[in-house]
Image (cartoon, rainbow, N blue to C red):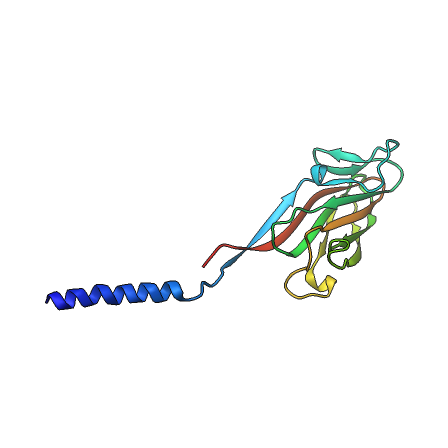
Length: 172
């Protein structure tokens, strides 16, 4: 009987050692990150002669002229599965807005520029979403370490949210 007891723990130990020796399989969990554009965006060509500025409810252009606004995205050591920006009409009129996303880091990795335009409905909102396919990749947008979106923000429009999604390795 004592021999059997000694064999059982040894077998359990072997199973435990084999389990530890087996390669751990990563488990990814999709994460989403959203940020207020008041802290993430700025005028692309700064000037003191403008009414375009961050507000509590977005980066707004209540003026009469368009302005280029650039929004930088935080990086979480994982390339993005997608990134987007939400645009709104402030004056109840329809607006066409063009935004350009860029990935890559100058000198370190090739940069790719992708432009998209959307029509923001009167008194409504619309999202511009950039996907891996837009950048010619599958699964993730490569080189998102220094990712940004620049919009030509027409008068009476605003950026209300920026966001990205990525897979986070949460272990096995």
